[in-house]
Image (cartoon, rainbow, N blue to C red; front, side, top):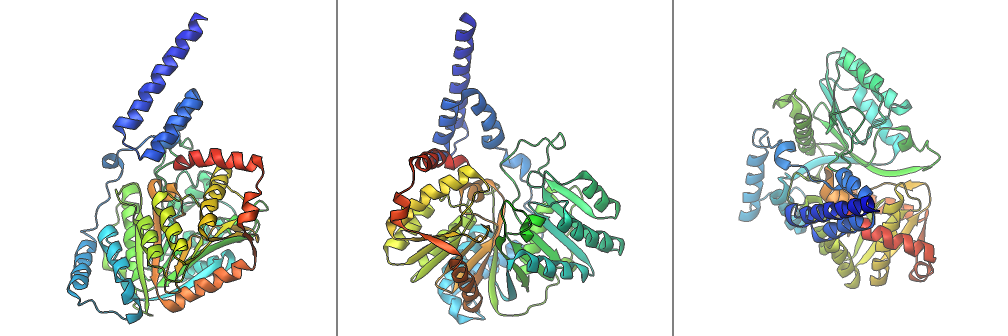
Length: 480
């Protein structure tokens, strides 16, 4: 009995000490702080280990040391565009997008996201089509290939990609592959060895000190980029694996959105890759013009916007809010996870209450149960404000898109949740082109035909069990 009292007292002191650390030393936001205090209160021993895995912050000074933007010419180009906008001398290739000048001014100031308006962009919503196009571009590469993916599998698709990379490396091309160590934890060492033996440079983002034992769930590189010869760039939601071709029974058909970009926006995608590569590798990529050899073509306006825990700003989220608040007619959103913070939730509610048609589409099945139940809880708030909610039924919806008034859009890797906004490294393409955006509207409306609409009455008829799951998940949502 005395030993139990001693253990209980020690555990209480330990929890109080850790709680004080969270509140006063780490200065997390209030919602995240309360969520972790609840975890420590209700599961004191396991809560400590969960905190080490999910909640412990990492020194930005020690980990995130990749500010080489000045050497890559980004800062000078940003300042030139800012001056032109402020002086009213900015030359628009398409005058229709001038009304969104404040949006790309925001991204210039907030993220050094250079605006380019001479791009051609192709939209992919099917994995087979996306990867066939990527494979053809990889086969046609003549100078270098840069791949960055959160998940790379060693399955059939992964092997097809590897075969091409090995062949190209043996031909003398520079081939680099960067993957996230946590996202690609199932990637076989044999796969990596094969690539390296052929001359492919392969690096893992934020690997553990002990191989295959990585407890750092946060601060993951969730970006997906492919750059071929500095001319062609791919960005969007598809990772590399058979499941993204719809070959896993658990998910069925995989509905995602990805872009193939040809034009000066590829410069910014290349810069993003170089920054990430130089952080993860000891073999830095030095600035060379051949890495930036894109050919201007088309008239689509694009900004490549990045965000992550290496910044005090939530750049992509800020862009989402700015887009929503600019809406006059409609906002269409597709996301696998919908856990908005208060600011984004308010923006959507205000838009809906102002007469803007807010439509949100989410999947009908979870790949992360707690996140799914939290998503359903936040959906209820928007239904009350008049938003329309659609549950996608034709497999798994993984797309991360926002379309506003058929004029501007965003496609990329950032989900609408705290993890994407604050804890992971993300990258999105913000698009300024009515024709391209209308194609995204068409895809959304086509998906509506494969979805069921969630009405307020149907939502109110949820069982007590579902309401309980939602309540618990919502309380934990700041740390999911």
